[in-house]
Image (tube, rainbow, N blue to C red; front, side, top):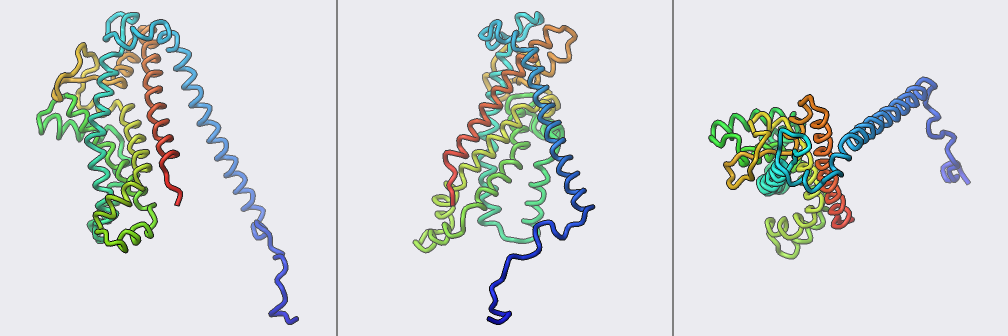
Length: 302
């Protein structure tokens, strides 16, 4: 048996055999640093949740029906979150109606129909950058365009449009990633059967990408429901004693009410703010649970 045909034995080099002691030390230190950072974040989150529950649970559990159905009052014991809770629900429904079809349509165009040129690359890069823009910037945009230029004022429609613009980049990015994850063989199979490009996208690609798209949409709405800065900037009222009957009516939201109660000196209002925070956290957990269910239930394993 010659050297060329001799079976290869196990290599003398093992993983990490070429690393020096300094590199190993740096890797270990970096791993420890990441672990410590993770533990610090978890402890901070647990402390925050415990503080909110410890402060507000007694206020919420004392009379949950009254707390959820009463309007705002100058007396902390009678104050409720009815108007803010209903306003948050209206804002989320309208925001989803505005941003979901536009975001999915933009993602389909960019992934399936847009030509690959400098203009498309410029648009894609800006969409990715807009996903990280601070929310207060979107509030200034909503104030300038929706509240003043379009003369919508501090209304339900202006707030929903502002939150929709803020959520659009996240939805577009999530939808594009879901569409991109659909194998090319699915498209080629549809073309082989005589389907047009639009029929292929509508009947094959989009249904397969819908679980990831819905997950990204719900996560974007979860961020929007907890935002305070955009709604403050466009001037939505904090204290309100009626339900909106029209899209141009003023509306409040839970983050605005929590912000107002935490700024008051009375300890009872701090307890009410913590109780309202528990309700808001419950809504966020419910929305994230729906996102996880949709992802696990309808995701296709290729």
